[in-house]
Length: 290
Ligand SMILES: [Zn+2]
Image (cartoon, rainbow, N blue to C red; front, side, top):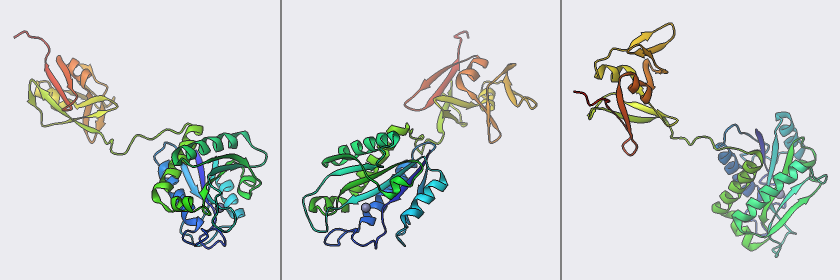
C-alpha cells in the first residue's frame, strides 16, 4: 500500500499564515505530515512518499506534486492543510475534509473516515466532507482527499494549530482513518526480539538458554539431550537432528539446533512444564519409577 503525503504550500507562500504571522501554514502541514509518515511506519506493508519539500526550501508547484504521486503510483493521496477565512481574525472554525467534485466513492469513504477521526480526536466542530475542484484532488490518479485541520484565522484554533499535542492528534487521526479504510495492521512492535527462555532439568538450571518464538519455546537440542545423557544425531543430508531415533522439527540458529520444548521433551521421555512469570521451561523425568 503506497500512501502519498502532501503538506500543502511552502513556508513563503503568500497569505498562508495566521493574521499576526505567528505561524505559517506550511509549518503545521509539514510537521503533521512527518507525524503521519512516522505513524504509518508502524504498519505492515505501507510505503510513504512526500510530494512537498520537507525542508521547506520551496513551494513545490501543484502539478509537480500530483505528477510525483502519479509516477510513483500511489494508492492514496492525503493533502494536509490548515484552513483560513479571509485575512483577519474571525469566528470561522472547525474541521472539513475535501474530495473532488465527482465525489469518487473511494475518496468519500476515506474522507469520511479521516473527518470522523479528526473531529473525534480534536473535539472541534464537524464541518463535514465537502467536494471542491482542487488541483491535487482533480489531477491525482488515485484516491485523494484534502483535510483542513482547523482555522488559522480563528484565535483559539490558531493556538491549537501551533501546539505539538494538537499536531500529533491530527496525525494520529489521519492514520486512524487510513488504517480503518485500508485495513492496515500494525506490525509486531519493535523490541519483540526473540525472548530468552530459562531451562531447568529436575530443578537444576542449565547454562544454555532457549527462546520463545510465536508462543513456542525452542530449546537447544544438544545441551538438553546431553544433560540427560542422550547424544543427539545429526543427519546432514536432511539437515535434521534426532534424539533416541526420533527426528525433531528443529531450526538451526547460528550453528545450534533448536527444537520445540514439547517435542524434545517427549523424545527424551521428559515431562515439560512452563512457568510463565519466570519464562522457564521445567523438564523432569516423566515416570516416578526409581
Ligand atoms: Zn492550505
